[in-house]
Length: 177
Image (cartoon, rainbow, N blue to C red; front, side, top):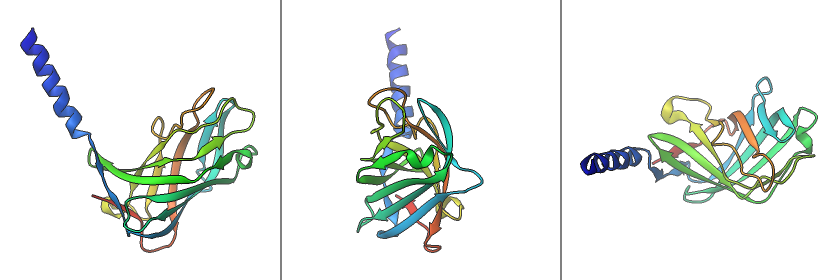
């Protein structure tokens, strides 16, 4: 039985090693990039009061060297609730690779939906599809539970949907090892 337990632990360690996150950088290594949701397919934002379809805009400013950047997020339109959702703070965006897939983590933002208990302050992880995986324009995909931001009270803030790079047209922002 002891050998079986050791074998299981070894197998688990090997499987865990395959999904370890690796540092990555942005390419190009500096610049400002704007991502927007498609108006015909808004991002679904939800917390305590239900789910709302919101147009989302994310501006990523890559710091020199491409290791990370700053991020701003707005919900300018969509459902009547969307413009009332406050997103504040100076966010940071950091690229990484896990299991051969490209991701970004966004942290440092506070999301305050109206008429909800608590604020959401947790990090958000989103998958990036760029020219290295034959997607043009670069796409950021928010999926639950990775894009769930933990809350100080109540349910987490959940965001599900896709954002597409709209500016500049070229070059496309990429996550590279």
